[in-house]
Length: 434
Image: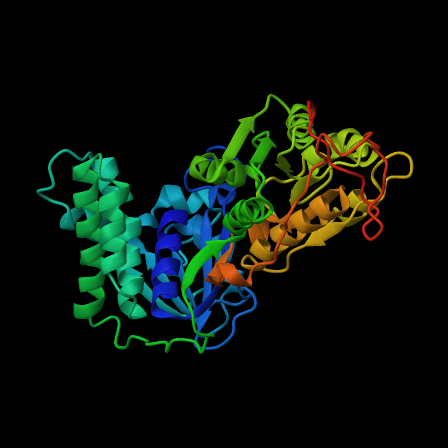
């Protein structure tokens, strides 16, 4: 569901609509199929005008099983469009979702425009003749059938998705063929079925001229850090321990070695921030990324960075709850912790982003403060921004600020480690061995 939602979002961005998304998936590694805790959803809000949030009340709800219907029906306003996979509403799945009767048949959905679509059986039928796939794999392609139907309903282009399928499943051509056929079958069903009398066309939004791309908050943070490192002439080092919802920053930066990025997957949160501070001590841009439970563990090393007067970027991708909390749910409750959650007198700047695309600018600003004033900086995001996406205007490189960084050099007379810059009050940044 996350994959198909992302594809719909990409094609919506290609059309020029403004948009915001809300991926919602369970915290369990593998929740029981058809259970309420196992429901995975993807919400897209798009229009021909400025969109600020992913919205609260969808116009269309696609429910792939009874659990998805029960979990999300309360968000659908009366008169909304409801598309259900009629094949999935059997006695066993209804019981697992807590239904005493079939809501499709008992009249409880009378307030909605209900479309009963046999998504599973039509998908399996469309894939007859595809060699090398199991019955289970054929059924799993129903998500692409649903994507094809929704793409027809809202006039989304198909070329990008078809190309994506070829690239994504290229190592298993039979799966690529199955998903392609399922996607086309969903589109053709919308085109030929009398059940859908109308389709909708949403005009492009009036956006500032330039090149746009779809971006998530964590991707924007990653690109912003790379840009800031290039602008400051520093190598970028990320020390991180995998934790939801910050892990994709480590994954993104690990694939950007050509930009002088070095990533280190540490054994724990304390080792991660220690390595990042060590990188700053050695003259690199040290960064560590985590969520609330990990940021708590980094506090002592952040205090050390304050005492050493070294730049350090701490990304806090906030998630819900105290202690371990709820890894996949968003919350913005760490502000007081990053401001005051250290012993002694240890003030630090805090930067916070308000949208996925703004994460790029927030990363550059955090680096600017860190290298200019020789201080650790916290950068706050959250699970909603991290995983949500929106159109991002790719900036002109010439418009980015200068982050020129200087180091103490040998031959300048006796080294005075605490000689202050008269403007910033920062001390010299001296690389060991200078």
